[in-house]
Image 1 (cartoon, rainbow, N blue to C red):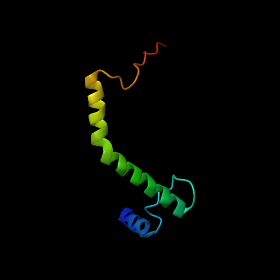
Image 2: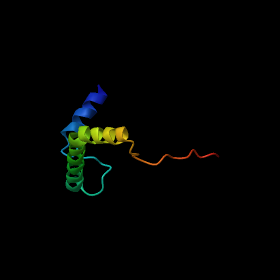
Image 3: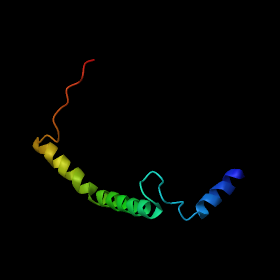
Image 4: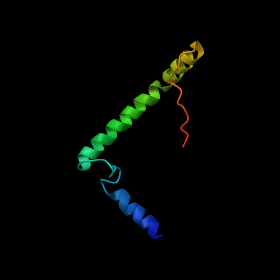
Length: 73
């Protein structure tokens, strides 16, 4: 029961949805969070085209990156 009370009190706080691990005050953090969510949404929107382009490059034999040599300790 104590958890529910604590969760309700936290959710009532206007800054509840503002990430605390971003720099700045609440307004700056919220603006940065919104920009990050927007950028992630844009990435998801374009993801199918990115995957298709990567497949097309692979099918043509184009390398997306150079092979990495295993490091022997």
